[in-house]
Length: 191
Image 1 (spheres, rainbow, N blue to C red):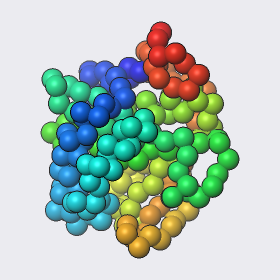
Image 2: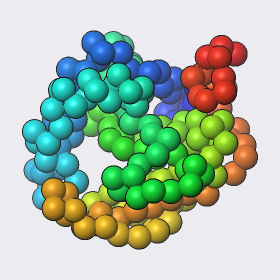
Image 3: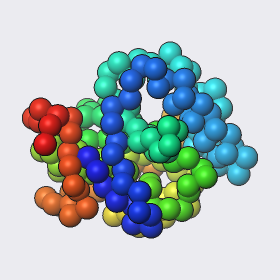
Image 4: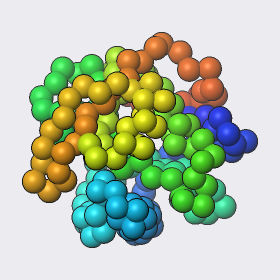
């Protein structure tokens, strides 16, 4: 699907990650974790996700990415269920994990564009909600998600990750920024 970022002329066309993307995704994740830790934010920790885990997630069809000039610019995991964080739920939501933006392009609206991509994919999968989680002690990220239309739906405590805030967004039926959609449930992957 192609979606324009609000602050950039770039068009996001997130595509399923291939197994040969695992190392680069792992590197992007490690860089993001290091950046967060360097600012005292307990969202991700370096070494928390290994390449084997990422390969398994790619094999499961969970990772999507957008490249710019051959480099991963945006990546995210898109799930149709998330019992680890949300428990057993009806099939009315899709879930985003691991949203990563190349830090050199932070502030260009790419995170918002990636979330709109996920919203549209969820809509095409006949889901009513898009859900995600974030570290409860990250007020800046909580504000960002509120600005994107997400509302808090609860908190969970995990030994490995600490307190986590669960947020969701009710999906409307149409996103005007969408030019194209590929690969959602019920589509053939063509226009």
